[in-house]
Image (tube, rainbow, N blue to C red; front, side):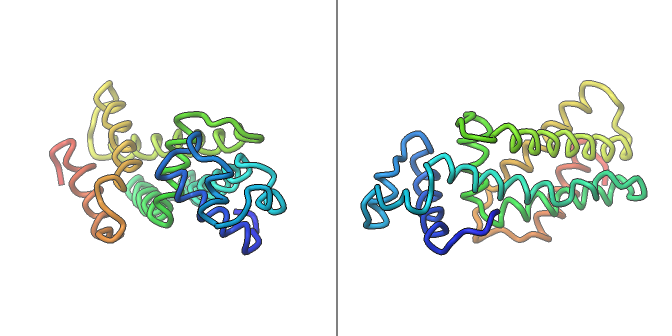
Length: 195
């Protein structure tokens, strides 16, 4: 994320909480100002618009996910090593800031909230998603799953589970190592009945 001033960080924190609870469309600059106990007009000394906050969120989320993109393309890594890197990075990026992750994927990625430069964030996330599916597919093939419709469904299912695990495991109960083992041993091995 770009370097924010302390006041911009405060605005982001308040906006993130409101976007998470109400959604982007149902949160106004006035709502943000009210929580901060300032006049809405004073926020514009620190930000251009509510959409700029979405750019900050998009930049942060897409950069966290893209951090290991080139590692996943390394031909010297085994399928197992790649999927482990993918799962660790995915869960770490998500649990680093669950609200930011949720706001991004719910309000920006799925609902296509419109803001300047959004296409570059969508492209980054779509590139990551495509590579993540490729890594999961390669891993499942290495375990003996045939390259057919079941493989495609299992691959998409696996990525969907990774994307939504935060909805089922609250932050306070999340344990990176334990949940990585669960996803590798139960989800990925379990779908083809092997361990």
